[in-house]
Length: 129
Image 1 (cartoon, helix red, strand yellow):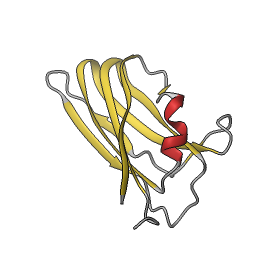
Image 2 (cartoon, helix red, strand yellow; image 1 turned 30 degrees about the horizontal axis):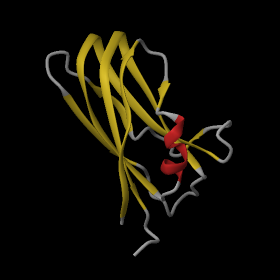
Image 3 (cartoon, rainbow, N blue to C red; image 1 turned 90 degrees about the vertical axis):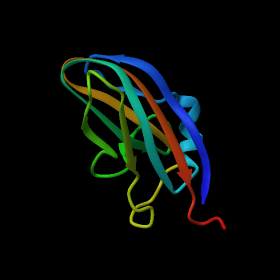
C-alpha cells in the first residue's frame, strides 16, 4: 500500500560531487518498507552526463550505508536537449532489513555535468492493509 508521495529534492546540481535529499525527509523515507524513486532532469549541460541515485539508510542519521547493492537509478544517460525522465525501485524489502532513516544520494557523472534535478519518492508499506 502506498503511504506517501513526496518531492525530496529540487535543485540545480553542478559537478560530480554527491548531494543528498534534505534531512527533514530522513524519518519519513525510513518509515516504510520500500521506496520508488522517480523524477526528471532539465537544463542539462556537459559531455556524456549521467545521473545516479541510491537509497542510503541509517539507524542514527550519522552512519549511512547503501540499502541495496546497486543504485536504484544507475548511471542514466541525460539528454542535453530535452528533459529526461527516470525511475527506479528499491529492492525486495523481505530480503533485507530497513533502518529507521533513509535518504537519497544523488550524483552526476560525465565531464562538466550540471542539471536541474527533481526527485519524488513514493513510500510503500507491505504490512499495512
